[in-house]
Length: 611
Image (cartoon, rainbow, N blue to C red; front, top):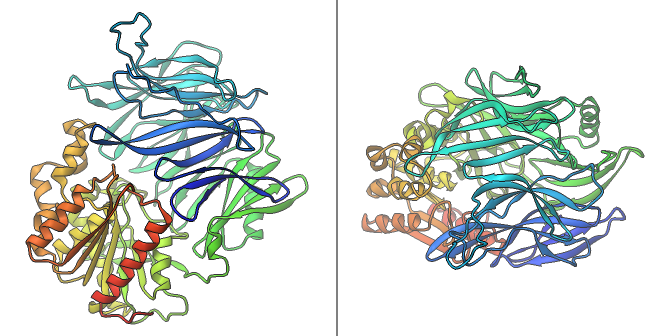
């Protein structure tokens, strides 16, 4: 499992069934961070590392894969090495497509990015380019090509038992950018011939067409998502030549959006969706019965089968809730005994956390907007300082469960509302509208109406209302004040987008003009929807935070915003974090940020030092 260190960085520890937790690897956050690990054998782990690197003044995210023994020895890099004569940097270090559960060896199937080499002065330059599949031995590093690279390839899907069944390609336009359609082809069992499966059209954040995610070898079907009456639904398509299509699950209120898979073969056992809470519909009757029993054994928790042994007789189970950050357990189905592995946030053991309640409020046009309300423990919910906290994205939504930001603010005496404003994903295409940038007035209207609702309900007063957001949420925190400069009395924006013209310059590095337009519109919208262009309208004091290695939203966006606010005579401060990216994924930095926000809100809203 991954365990955070006391400061920056993370460590890898192995838990054994006798309850012993053995650290085997530490990585400083300055170099790379561990993103996840899985077993290639009973004694060997495969892990993904991620880092932000500076290549001649341009920041980019780089992933690499390593293999390491369970005792921390014999660490080797599985990703191909970067060579000096390659034409460009290989940023993608690969991923495991298939753990080959039917074999006893140490090999896996890996997706690989091939980068061509300069041929000058050599006769053995590697000229292949694109995405392919290799069989890689995680001990010896022996590599064998399974699927030759395709220059237009975007991915492959295996059947979980060593056979590649689906390939996706995306043609390039004359400009060099990718087109707006991904074409999928499949192979019948035992065949080497690729046949048409589906085409998926991409328009901004939305897609249409059957988008395959997994293959069930025994049923000989592909599971994937497509639209059903304007919402995402799960389908299965026969891979026997008939392409018979069957609707597995659709809902009339929310998107069905995630497969549930377990074990080394990544067997599909269900599908999930989020109403006011994340729900799972299990296909497998035994897993469904087990989940029902676990919900009784761990009442009040959302239960998820996170992993399984090859024979599925031992399961890793996760249970968590709004007041429980979560715990992992090992369940032995034969003995029906369950042992705790570890808590996600052990430092919060014994701390009483605030409950999160799903609510709706009325927008100005009468629309019911779903949201989550968190009140301080023991509070009657009246006359509190309050925070509107819009989520990031904009192609995202908030869900019920533990949230470290809202829990911190509740512990400091604030009421927190998290609106799933129009422009949020998960509720279908109509609710998503044209996304939170192109439909910014609609989204910001809903965000502001969340604050007004808090006032009319008596939860807070106009003098004690603030807004806090991260990423797109930071954009919303600023732009909502452009729409209504008098509503919020304090603004906190973490890694915010502040200028859509700057954003389009970033997007066009890897997106076509049409793709950029689908996401953020054109120049007229960039002007009206950019908070930095309307800094003079923002009356409330503003506090910004940003990492200088942010490749999602470059720190230049926050620097521009604070400069424009100062030029307009506003009160603004920017806190910069050297070496950190968009997530500010560092314990000390986050703790310091929370303290700064708390002090800022208390000073600005004229609140007592202690709640």
